[in-house]
Image 1 (cartoon, rainbow, N blue to C red):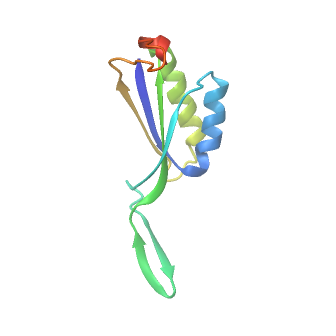
Image 2 (tube, rainbow, N blue to C red):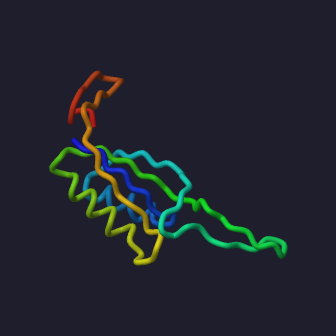
Image 3 (cartoon, helix red, strand yellow):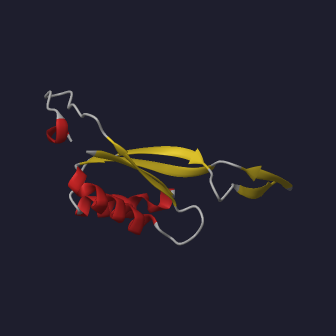
Length: 112
């Protein structure tokens, strides 16, 4: 099993969520986060004063999937989150040692 973690633009969350649901991914965790990379923030003007906004709002999606579904999950997120502009985000894939469903005590892929 692997954990797929994606940092994407907030406006791309709904298309990504719907596409993941279409490939039978029914569980995910979504967190509102802030950060910057190559984009390095933006300059804004408020009441005539210019200031730098370093941390931009993003959304982090976390999905745990069996090994055979990891590539379809990654491809789906990448395709639906891509706008072609700086700030589209990143996808990280981590190995998962063990998963335990608290309610039933199921372990492994049965718990996902």
